[in-house]
Image (tube, rainbow, N blue to C red):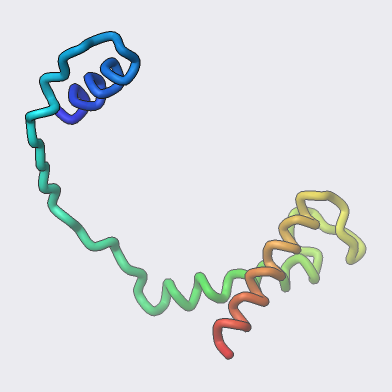
Length: 95
C-alpha cells in the first residue's frame, strides 16, 4: 500500500493524474522495533585494540608485504593514516 501511495503521489506531482485516491487514506504501519545486537566485552576490547595491532604490524613489516621498514604503496599509506586517526580518536575519547 505504501508503494502505491508513493507512486500516486509521484504521478500526481508530475501531472499525469488529477485524482489521487491515497489523499484520504491513512496508512499507519507499526513495525516491531528491535534493539540492535550489542557486542560483548571481549568483542569491544578486540575492536578497540585493532588499530594498535594493525599499526604494530605495519611498523614491523608484517602487513601487506611491507619491506625494509618503508611504506611502498598508496594503499599501505592510507591504511597507516586510517589506523593513526583511529588511534588518536581513541586516545581523545579516553581522556
